[in-house]
Image (cartoon, rainbow, N blue to C red; front, side):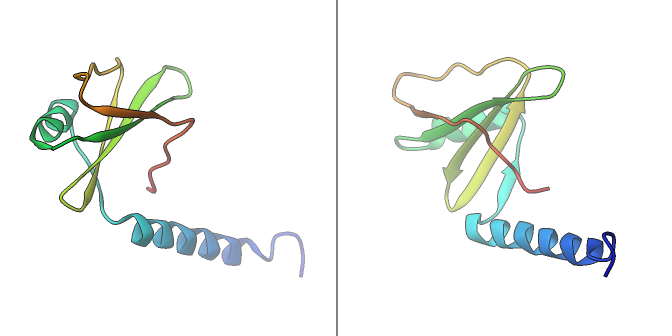
Length: 97
């Protein structure tokens, strides 16, 4: 087999890994920041995972769980949260695409 022969197998393995990640984490729902904040307002003792990312400009990424789903938003400016929200600062958030 030459150096290029395993490309299809590698792509299939990557697709399977993404599918397994989605199955393990459940549904991830992307919402606008105002909707994300609305979900937090309806939550009892919410936990928010935050990270910064972006190639050319900084993006702020946020995740929270609500009623069995994971909600995600991305903003160009950081969100401000009330003091009763528990924050976990992550090095990176990766959303399967």
